[in-house]
Amino acid sequence: MFAATPEDSTVIMTIVRDAYPGTEPGPETPLSAAAPAFIALSVSDLEAATAWYSEVLGLRRVRDVSSADGALRASVLSSDNVVIELIRHRSTLAADDVLESQAHRFHLQGIVKTGLFVTDIDRLFEYLRERQVRTDERIGTDRELGLRFFIFRDPDGNRIQVFEPCAGGCG
Image (cartoon, rainbow, N blue to C red; front, top):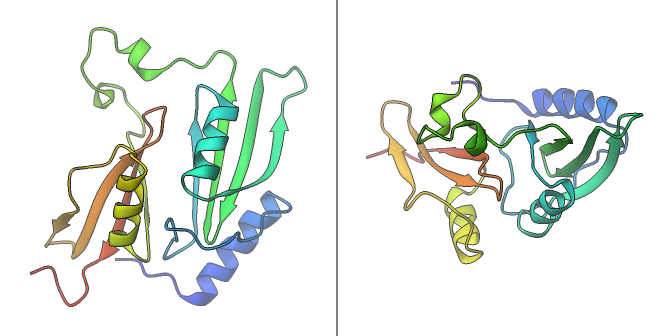
């Protein structure tokens, strides 16, 4: 399993900050990453998604970008070691609309979910449940990998899986 050192974290966040000027760590939130993480997500409503990630997860809006013709707009949000880019293109299709005859997003090729390691999975799980965010029913355990995990979903149904190493083993 890869474990980022403090030096790795500094290098990775420097690269992210160079790519997104003005991206500095925001205040610590329950979505406090154990290692630097970058996620880009396609959303149906950029303003609503930006508000949700800001209000529910405590991320700070760093900047907005758009294409010259306005077809593509994006917001970059940041907190602690997490940078999330929310992207809206005027021709974006919702997975559920594409999958009219299918039951699940797993039927589409490509990324099904994204994930990151967090510093306090129990705190994050309770925090999200209190705010009625769609989560797994419980925190799962993978003994072979030595990890605890759960998945939560944003309002567009994007799946974000969070992990935390088991302290003292998963037994």
